Length: 340
Image 1: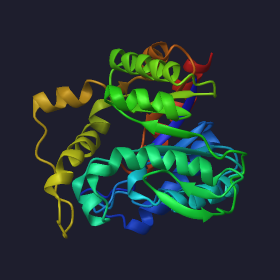
Image 2: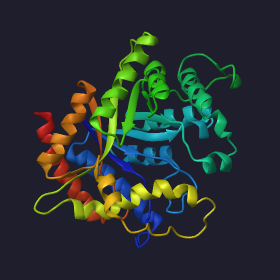
Image 3: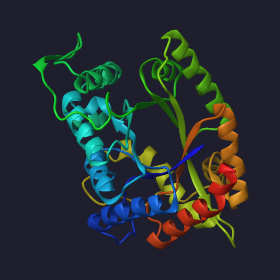
C-alpha cells in the first residue's frame, strides 16, 4: 500500500488570520515535511472563484513542490480538465514532470460547479466530452508526432514541447463516482481515484473499474486510489480536535453554489447539529493510530490489494503545528501498521 498526504487547498476559513502568502508558504513546508516523514505522495486539489481562496492553480504549486522536494510523488486530486486547454495542460504538466524528474501524477476530474464553467467560458454540457478529449490530446502531445486533436477538438498539427521526463508522460488518473464515469476511467486512464466513501461502496467502484478495463482490453499498469478524511491522535480524543475543521470543509462544498458572485470574506458555517455531526463522521477515519489503521485496511481489502491511500490530513483553519503533529502521528504510528 502506498500512502499519500493531502488534499492541500490553501483555504482560509473565517477567523484564520493567516494571509494567502502564509498559507501557500505553509503548504510548501507541509509538502517538504510529508517527504521527510516518508509519505509516498502529496496531493493538491482545484476549485475557482471560491471566497475562501480554494486553490485554483495546481500545476504552479506542483512546480514549487517539485523544486523543494526530491523523491515524493506530486499528485493533482483533481485537476478539472474541461476548464483547461488540453495542449496548454500538456505543456504545463510536462514542465512539472521535468522539474520533478518524473514525479507527477496527473489526476483529472470533470468538475461540477456551473460558476466555474461560466466564469471561464466553457459550456458545462461539454464537460464529459472535454475530459475524454483531454486524455487523448495529452497523450498525443507527449508522443512523437504532431498534435491534430480529436474529431471534436482540432489542432493544426502542432509540435508540443517540451516532452515529459518519462516517455509517454505522467500517469493519468481519473476521479469519478457514478458507474458510467468509473467504467470510463477503467477504459481510458492509468488510474482511478475515489473519495469520501465507505469500503463497500469503494469495492463496488473497483468492480466497475475492472469491468471497464476488460471492455477495452486494457493491458497497461493501472493504480487504484482513494482519499479519505483522516486524523489520528495520541493522548486525547481525536474527534474534538478535528470536528470543526471537518465541518467547515464539508459545509463549504455545499456553500459553493450559494457563494456564487460573493465578493467578501467567507462566512462561518452554521452550527453543527447532532445529525450533521453523525453524517460527517460516517466515513472519517478519526481516532487512535490503531483505529485509523484498521479503517484504512478495510479500503485496502476493498481494492483487492495495491491501493494508493491518500490520507486527507490537510484541514483548513487548523493551526500549522497541529497539522504537522497529525502528520507525524500518521507517519510514525499508523503507517508502520499498514506496511508490515
